[in-house]
Length: 446
Image 1 (spheres, rainbow, N blue to C red):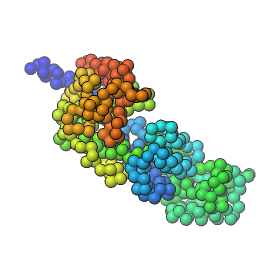
Image 2: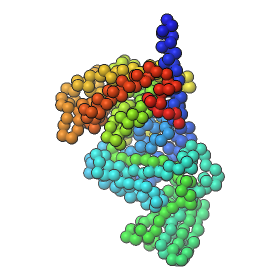
Image 3: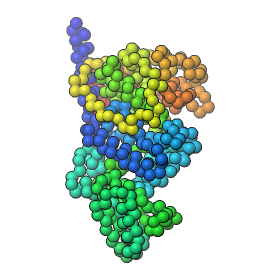
Image 4: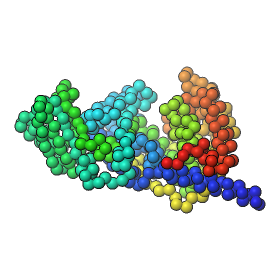
């Protein structure tokens, strides 16, 4: 009896420290609201170039219903013309078109790229990571900073005469935006045209009016003769406060809502989201779950967590194809706060069982998959080999929607042994006191 009590107390302590660590990484609702505003602003930019184009949030903000510290915004652009799964060539052209529209709708010094030499072309924006910008995500701006976030300018390498000044003012008014102020300052051979709008949405829309080749102010061929900017690099429209990626493959949206359903299943463990975030942290700390280093992605780690719940009978299977096509899914999720009453013992014991499960997993025969109501085997997906071309099939994680896609294709024999060893080390660390061993598992609290 005393041994059982001692074991229970041990897991409660571990669960308390794990939960506190994860809670320290959750951003307040204001950050979630800012993310929704950022999506709305990109939506407005998208509508100006794609008929029936819509921006969807995906990734962790959808799966958990929360914003985590350090998370980028993952977004997807889906058009009614090309559907949720355009072919690779079309996706490349669409992403290039969106890249150029975003590029000329934000300050000129912004770090934005079109990455097309990859399986899924994307537009990538890297935000200013200064504390002032982070603060603007978490809290409401002061009156002066809020006014700055609605102010922008065009800097021309030539003077604007009165006609071009009038033309530019009329061009901004023609957008339908609520313009509060417009001023022109002609200097020695250059001109600065400053404007302030009633909303950050309108500011981005007005920043994107040039070059259009029609105004007579500046043409596409001379677009390098002007720049765009804001009075402060820290007081920005919401879209520019976050780093973000935009792709054109709607499978990621469906995946996100499938995972959200599992993580928030009322019949499953109430601590499922906390455990999932802890497993992702473990992946980051060990680097096994860092996709940028050629290892598993956070998405892959999450599928492993859900498969563990399915195999241990803690959640019921849900047919992935019952999740609607991305065109019919919400463009943004509802906020879901973490439960206040957390079963600490359950948090720790679930993680311990997760590491135990995969330390003994039959990687040679079994496939980690959400596609069937039973255990999945290599024969089910036709992966009766360990390598195909340049990809590995030692650790097999079947994507629920993309045919023949192994989410663990970068994991070779060495990395698989490394993973098994990491699971064993996690089990060993969790046998010790959390006060001294927690950091080895999921890192420091923030």
